[in-house]
Length: 398
Image (spheres, rainbow, N blue to C red):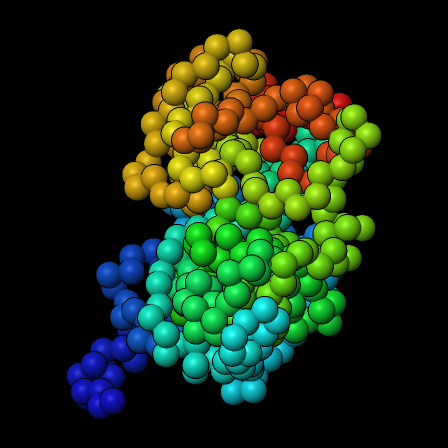
């Protein structure tokens, strides 16, 4: 690309006049940006140096989305939460393959190029880890990211799994399939074939680009609305059968003891939930009008309503839902509130299109027992606003 002599001299003159090096310009914005030539175009876009949202690692196996730093419903790909059991593998897309076999007429192996030759679809859906609740303790200095950071929404692109099942001639007697990952954990889950015929995808795209390695590059199983662990990443094998495979991840793990002594198994669906992301810790409020906002989601379809309480649950008011309200995707809600300076507890509860209402902690424990709080914990949560304006998480004993 040619640069004119006038443009070159103008840029150099601006730097000399201000007496700053390029590095200094990057770290300190000029007082009047109209007086200095801006940066040239570049191959990869970057965030403004003043914006520094980051995922928050939880050990070596997961990291959470910074919901308090986001505005809409789509999660930037590099901020999408991650969860894995054996680290993130590096897989060359040229060597990638997906085997589909078992109760099929034609066992087949598909390369990534083969998958991309099929008609593609793009859909916006959330993913959520079934262990997405960090508020069981007594800590009050918790951010939305620490409370429920293991959920994110992306636009996913790929091929419908039902299309591949037709291609291999899946037997009508096959009612389950095994999904196997190519990571060091070789994670496997049994999935009902009915989900494949509903809305399951083999996804290779995320938010307009190839899915990130933490999300299963080069291809993953996507089961909209179902617990994250069942959405097997780095997918390499699918085997159809007439019964579940009873793998480790669905017997010793991801099975929930109930209060009556029984256990829930194959509890795929993620129930309706909401999260206020502003105001929340560590915000300090000033008196006056405040827009309470946050996100709500459900694995059962669309969010019908989100109610907001500013008096600790004594009364509730419907919030405004931001359009478009999509099925099995984060929906943002907003509610104007005039804070006059007194102590207050703000809360939200989601209601989905099936009529399911997000439960309180007490209702959840009564239904499932204290021992089952490991997975699918979606209680109504609140933020305590103190008279000095500081906001902290309203902790409840579990």
